[in-house]
Amino acid sequence: MREGHPDFLWRNPAPKSSYEVVIVGAGGHGLATAYYLAKNHGITDIAVIEKGWIGGGNATRNTTVVRSNYLWDESAAIYEHSLKLWEGLSEDLDYNVLYDPRGVLNLAHSLGDVREGQRRVNANRLNGVDAEWLEPEDVKEFCPIVNVSPDARYPVLGATLQRRGGIARHEPVVWGFARAADALGVDIIQGCEVTGIEVVGGRAVAVNTTQGRIGAGRIGLVAAGHSSVLAKYAGVELPIQSHPLQALVSDLYEQVLDTVVMSNAVHVYVSQAHKGELVMGAGIDAYNSYTQRGSIHVIEHQLSAALELFPIFAQARVLRTWGGIVDVCPDASPIIGATPVDGLFVNCGWGTGGFKATPGSGWAFAWTLAHGKPHTLNEPFSLERFTTGALIDEHGAAAVAH
Image (cartoon, rainbow, N blue to C red; front, side, top):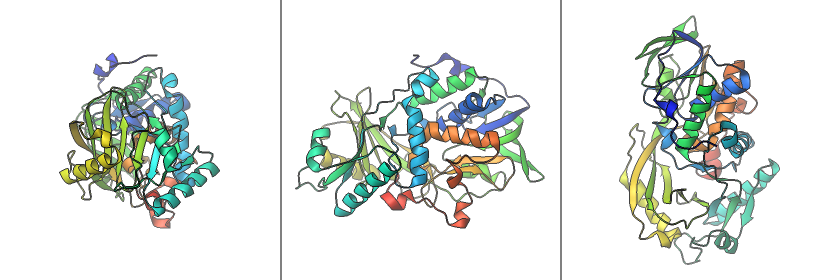
């Protein structure tokens, strides 16, 4: 199985005058869409265009968590499908994406957390998703370094556990999908920024780019943090706000954390990467912004909470911090489907759940682009739900939708 930086990424073909499908955005979701279009549907006349470079946006600005233990049926279905794809993804792509099912703990710090966690465990089991409830002593046994003292500022009253959850390595995920799509005949064009979308008779027929006009039978917008900007080129308003999402990594240390620990109440989640750095994420910044830095007080709160839970990390040194740009819909669930403009489709609004959804998102969006209508997995995530009121409010259900 291949590992390392694939040489083909340096190849950058000039775009043809037109394609059957044009996908805007060469991050994980866009490249996965192209791969599954070619593999599952035999459509290879595809251009994936990217204003920067492959994986230069949110794809490598995340905290690598993979899980499927969401509350609502619709979310559980698409994330569980994604997790099943994760489990065989390295073999499928012939590229090691370093998927590691080390388990994901969601800590409970209050009676409300306990009730929500137990409710989610039961809902997961009804949907065929593996889930367990752990008492504090079981949490300590599963993750010995977490502080479960009743005198802690955030006492651990229990936790949910999904053993099949874990982490993967973001760069190999992007490279693996890109390499596999390229091998099937997909054109991946870097340094190609969209400057407009041409609409004729109510149908999107082309994208205008810094490398010229590119005709398209169908257009898929999969540009995290910028989908609403691109959709406006076609006159489509998306109900999305963009926020920085804070995260950081430490220096490299010996492996001491063999699971993923998340705490919705204090908006922090911690894992240790394969190389040894601690990877920590926080909640989104409250203000709208396209910056990739964010505000320092979010990081300060994040570190304070993390040290309460993990006193062993008190002497760890922060290596770097960053802010990915997340698109957030009013119900914190994505939009995957058609727009009012014929031939124009969007896959956006994943908020903090984007990385873990990568293969499932690409699989479902590929089906949608191939058939011109949504698959049953993504049909509930249509744009129309914001007028019908059929929302999928994971944020309201679990306080945070990481």
